[in-house]
Amino acid sequence: MPDNASALDLVLMGDPALFAIVRLALIVSLSAVLAAAVVGVPLGAAIALSSFRGRDAVIVLLNAMMGLPPVVIGLLVYLALSRAGPLGSWGILFTPQAMVIAQTILVTPIIAALARQTIEDLWVEYRDELTAMEVGPARRIATLVWDARFSLITALLAGFGRAAAEVGAVIIVGGNIDGFTRTMTTAIALETSKGNLPLAIGLGMVLITIVIAVNALAWMVRRTAERQAG
Amino acid sequence: MICFEEVTIAAGSGTLLDALSLSIGAGAPTVLIGPNGAGKTSLLRAAMGLLEPTRGRIAWDGEPRRAIVFQRPVMLRRSAAANIRFAQVGADRTTELLALVGLAHAADRPARRLSAGEQQRLALARALARDPAVLFLDEPTASLDPASTKAIEDVIRRVSGRIKVVLSTHDLGEARRLAGDVVLLHRGKVVEAAAASCFFDSPRTDEARKFIAGELLV
Image (cartoon, rainbow over all chains, first blue to last red; front, side, top):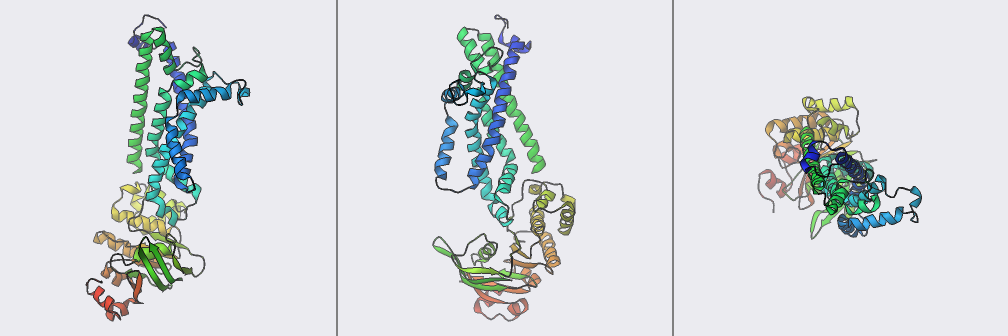
């Protein structure tokens, strides 16, 4: 990566080092969002449809967890995955897998909390109809998740935004190893501290472009699908 | 078939049904009429198990096989055909039911894009897909145009030979056209229950006479 190249040059010339960083960052963030969706959407739906003692406290806790400090989560995952930690035998500290785990923990409460609210709102509308049709609990959840699918895209986007912008956790558990665990945000932090502003700015441009592109794509998919499904 | 025994349903400081007793037997449609707030919807919801009696009981003759079409049915966010298939019926039965309600042409259209009348007919088909012995209809033609009303009433006539239909309505004309029996409700109680011809030709109570004459019940 030439030190004297401008930010735009790096982007337009398809600098391999820059795009390796972009590629890894996308893989880590999208994997984390996917894993968080698998856990968070059913969790949010289950909370939305159930009534139990302490439900309000669970909802408050879940909402509060949307603001989990990344460095704290990074530290906890680091401790869990370090050699002396309970998951040390996995041997994945300072790997992309560790970064995915940390980001999944950060993103899951966001997706679960937003899914809970979305599905609870839809449940108010569907309750009588599904109860009258004697639809069982598992099918209720599946029906509500499917019918809320367009709204849930927003929850996934919020999760992706959190993951893509996150730096504190991945730098602790990934180690920011060049060519292996360096993502856009960790590279921006490092290159800025080194004074390599063109690369930092180039990465920043790519990061913002990706976030906008993903949101635009999701919006188009949602709009088209909504038109077809009604 | 269904027996309401002294059923009271309290809600907040009010009473939706007040020690209501009523037997609904098999045969031609039973039509519930009465002013707003009389308890028609509450009675249907209680029969569906959506409202629990505070006192009294609702007894069914055997296992209740029941379905309901709400006044404002909720269409699932999928095609018309998929809304019927949601009741776990096969493709052939779905096609048959869509044809029955005159929506064969709209099978693949998103259910939420259908007109109000079409949605009501689709809800009727979806309820019939559950193969109910008793079908409850809560003001099924309220705010529909005459053509949609006729379409719904035609379907009710076609199915009422093999399915017991219990419907609520504000429309006395509709009650005359469809009812085998009429039940007049007021303030959560049955004021009068009779065969339709008797009810309309020689009502026994002042409330029934006033209601038929279009006067307010107080």
